[in-house]
Length: 265
Image (cartoon, rainbow, N blue to C red; front, side, top):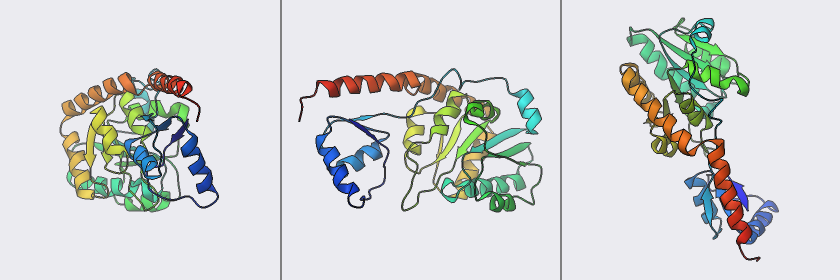
């Protein structure tokens, strides 16, 4: 058996393509991270059984908590919209900050737009918001062991990824991590993000690259704290049911047992 995340149809160069073809013919069972990845496997000629095997989350480490002290130490006030991840073009951070600057110019209520991460786009992104000081906070990448603490500080996590010819979101791990912490999400419709949000019911979907649509979605959640709470509760329940490490491990165990019973080729 094998596991695949490839969700874009592209051919490997020789000799890798020959090795891949041999694996596809000899495998008893495949696991794919998403429906798109499973579709790519069929396109490559794999005809055997496929089981979806998503990422999982530790529900003890990623859980709601009191973040008042950390929020104060970080200087975050009002409703906090946050981005977590690499500062690279395909992650769409510029779209998030463009939408945020429009909100900052029109919204009187206290808001903080928070960017947590590092990467080559940092100087460019800081330039986008240089004239709206006070509402934008940048924090370098934090260790993954501490991510749950920082996620819990946010009121909404934004995942604005953009599709490129050679890449689109294969899953969106931060979505299940945020929801496990009781934080709703707004995600673009890149790759697996919209399917994941629909299954979990814990957020909103915005067309990728559409600054106005993202700003509208953010304004909607800014104005409706009860809706934010309902989305967070719905999403957290769904994560605890099917996206914990234990749930993913149980699926993988069942797949391994099934593959072991398959006749030798």
